[in-house]
Length: 185
Ligand code: FEO
Image (cartoon, rainbow, N blue to C red):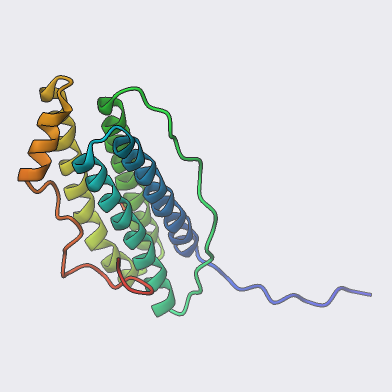
């Protein structure tokens, strides 16, 4: 007796990578919470606030991808997240990690664009344009923050004053951002 044929829903490589990117963005969000908590524990409220905000932005990025998949009728599969680092010795080390994380996300978005292009998915490619620009901004602002921290040479109150005075990054207020499932936070 032959086994009954199972219905297999075809999930494109691009769709699989988008599902994986939801996990990556959620991991980035959780990692930024760990960074914010580290600063909060050291009584550095501006640095903590900056990273709590970044955590929300990453969460919004994940939910924008979820919304896109829903809009396309491609049901997203929500996965768990990767390990998060909590132990750091210096602020430089923390922000250097954040900068590396942003560079990795840029590489992931580039890989997504390549996959969309390989599948002739023009709408997918168009959806990713906002993310490409966002990564330029996020890498630049993390690079700025790392420079400010290095220049402060251990005096993190100077960094706190800088952050209280200057906007670093767009703080998630971009009206051209794609819609996030459930609403952006
Ligand atoms: Fe969602 Fe900072 O990349």
